[in-house]
Length: 618
Image (cartoon, rainbow, N blue to C red; front, top):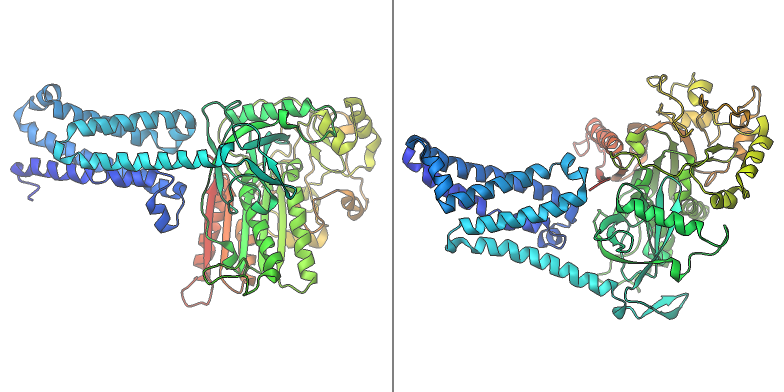
């Protein structure tokens, strides 16, 4: 076609219209959670959603060409364009479909989509139904098949999800479950009963015993609790392994349903008959429904070295990956050729080295995974004593840098005011008296005050490495003017630690910030280390999850951490990060720069680096 020929404008309009129509089935295939594209490519629906959005933008582009060429063919006839838009039903419905499509694409941009995800989903469903109806009425009857195809794809996805959700959640199909090696009857209509427990940092632990599904490390599931979060169904990362015998989530409280979930967990926790009472009874648990699991990640056991970065609750993604590799290390001796079939993938790992980095806002958040991390370190040490060539290095960075620890960019929730106490063990934030009793053996605020006063000047105070070790070149001096204390008295060291080895050479494993806030007027809450005190002895008194875990104050330096791992790797490596945008961008930039610097797969002998990024939000 000659695009400069006026007589061809309408033909070009027809052609671009049918090109636009042919993209509709692909858009719906990419939008579904159960789709054939994901099955063939091995990609999860959340990865394909990125392609879904770009195909939709391509659709808007071709629809605009379709509209533009028709308008251009009418332009020489004066007001004929207005006449067509006001009198021709086909033109009116086509223009309405284009306006709806513009809104759908515009509202799907991240700032608008993240403003209120529930509102976005609701209006997205309503507008695409309106778009499909307008396009159906705009098309001739011979082209209606292109509309029925995406409708069939959407209905198949919804129907398959609904049937699977009924199968795994309805107690009718799970009348008996294994509990402590014996069959136990499931009471009620729903098979999943969740126990809610509040944790520090506005986090809720949701535990479902004997779950009706199986999953792999790194996957997530949709969780709904209609009695607390009506008409809401949100995805959360599964932070447990199937071998644990329970399905567990750690959910950060934000506005809306997650905040109500945390408030209910706090109410149940305070209503227990005693601080050291047993777990909530059946009456105190909540019926929930789950959907999934979803999500895929390349098996990490095929890599020689694995580096895992996590920011705050991002550890819900990386911790199961770490534990899964350690579990495979432990089970390698039990795998024999007689037990493995010809199509069975052996449950073994070729990984030799794991580097685990966790960035948290305060030391109290270490309790989220203290038990799991301690067990992993203990298992690896036992394997090394047996002569196994495996290694696990774990570091925890304590910082108040919200770009590395905050989940969302929404406004901070108002939490129940609580005391902030700094003692020789940890910084406790927003804990009720029951939690104080469990950790410190106190039952009233008076006991807490007496314990602080009895600590005196002999308590271990958090040390600022920027002040005490200013001669060490491994600390960045660009952040010397940063405020050292947060509004809640938490540690706020934001210096970048470029070399952990330099710290270990002059200081034991646990190095924490010094906070000297102006509002801490009480001498009992403003403890300090005297000059000439044996730092090694006092640091040893500080409890840590495991002696082999390095705890530092400040920001990690992803480039140096990844570089050191790549230099000792004897095969391909994997770098996985889950956290806020700031941490993800830092790690991604480091991996790209190191791959270019080492000339991976360009004749230098440098092995490949696989990168996987998992982000917060929707």
